Length: 253
Image 1 (cartoon, one colour):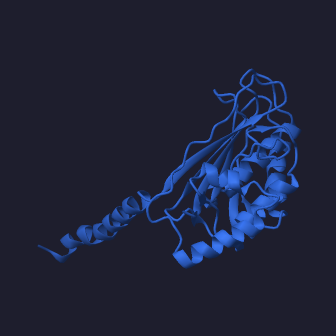
Image 2 (cartoon, helix red, strand yellow):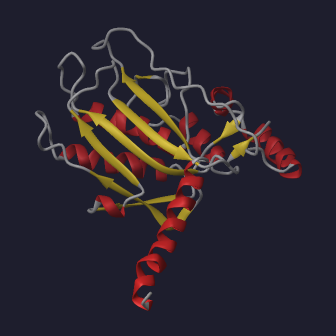
C-alpha cells in the first residue's frame, strides 16, 4: 500500500475523536425552557409553568464550599425571591460564568418578514440586556451582526400557539453553568392583537431574566412574575440577580 493511501485514515482519526468527544459532552448538557405571559387583560387567564428540574448526581458543590454558599445565601436572601427559584430548581442555582472581559455575544435577528414588525423592537431588546447589565452583575453584552458569532440568539415569531408572548431556551452543563441560550419573542398575541413597543420591551426584560438564570416569582410587582404586569425591573429583580451572580452555580443539597 502506498503512503498516500494512509492519508484519508490519518485525516479521519481526529474527526472521529472530535465527534466522540462531542457526543460524550452532549450527554451532560441539560436544556431548560421558560415562557412569559403578558398581562393585562388582553389574554385569557392562564399561567405559564416552567418545567420541573431535578438536580443530578455530581451537581453539588464540595462540602466546605456548600456551607459557605448557604451562609452567604442566608445573609443575602432578604429582599429577594431567590427562595422561589431554589424551590423550582430542586435547590440548585444556574447562571452564566462571569463575562466581563469577554462579553456575552448576542445576535438579534430581524422580524421584517412578519406583519407588524418595527425596527425599534430590536433596539428595545438591546435596552433590555443593558438594563439587566446595569443591575450590577458581572456580565457584559456585545451585539454581533453574524449569528454564527453569537452565544445568544434572539429571534421573532408572529405568535405562539400557547398563550405566551416570549420563550427562552437555555442549556447548562452538569455543574449548572449556563452555556448557551436562545430567546424567541412574538409580535402578536395568539388572538391576533399586536404587541406594541412597550410590551415588547417588557417581555424582552422578562426573557433576558430567564436567560440570566432567574425563574418566576409570585410577586406581580416584579418583571419575573409569570404573568408580566410591570414594564421595568423592580428592586427585588435587581437584588435577586445580584445575589445569584455573587454565588457559584450548582446544587445546594
